[in-house]
Length: 395
Image (cartoon, rainbow, N blue to C red; front, top):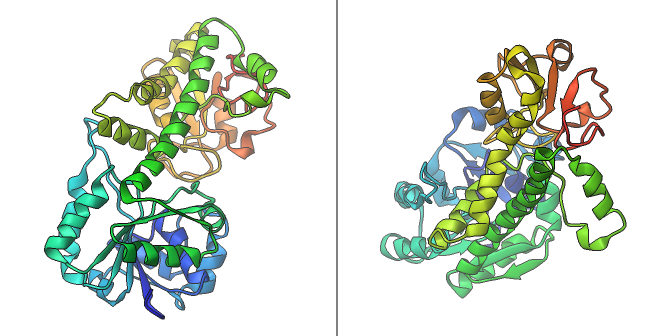
């Protein structure tokens, strides 16, 4: 790795890029965030994270204006010895990976890349994408070293996990692999070396496994609810002091910007024969309707239903792909009124929790925020998480 080189983090103002940029700065690197979002760049330069991240505010205050800079000027990428690209391959409306977006980005960046740089793909990509980008590099920027080093952190805990979890690194060439190893070793993490396609699959396997695990719990939950059985009485019985069931999660919405998307990318890679992943999608995406069906016995047409929590997981401020929004849409078709609350979001239709508790005839715990634990609502509550300790049935 070039001595005293600058590391540029492309797309570095978001949930993946900013924690990495802060971690690199804290490890002694000079870091330049390059992001086309002017408002996000301005926010970072003011010392504001813009989202919840444990330890983020402190590190940003420590390094912004010093080891950490931010700009919207993509031409400054040419200054960096290493460019970390926080752009992956999303899926389209047909659940197919969109590699074209990444290739289009490379075309835009071409004037600012040069031989001798290390270019690291960091976000999830479709298997084979790194090899495809390497062919683009050979044609357009020969001498640019290419690596894929997937992130595997939990949102909100990224800074801690970047430094504590093993880092998977790969490279198209031994030089790229060695430089990637050196960069991520500076963060204090153990290093695991794979070839690029193995590394791409490793990330997808991690998210697909979690998605399938959640689907297993949600299938068990749906089976119980449809037969009037409290899932959590069974769950507690089979997990208590029984090590072989420790890995079974509880029920609840499995959502967010990664798990569903990455499972569908793995399905596309397997010629749409990934039946486990496809079944998991049907189960997890179908859970909101399972909850609505469970509530129908309570005369929904004449009731106001309150939803507690709208983010995709507990105690975060990210609502991307949250199934709570799908639940709200379904209930709007069936109820007199739907009222929602979430302390982490700002929408004009959200109400304070106290007002929702006052207005609702029925309650659904959609996101198990810590604030809700200990509530003792007077209404019938449907709580697939068992967050309030009432079990998984509406009561």
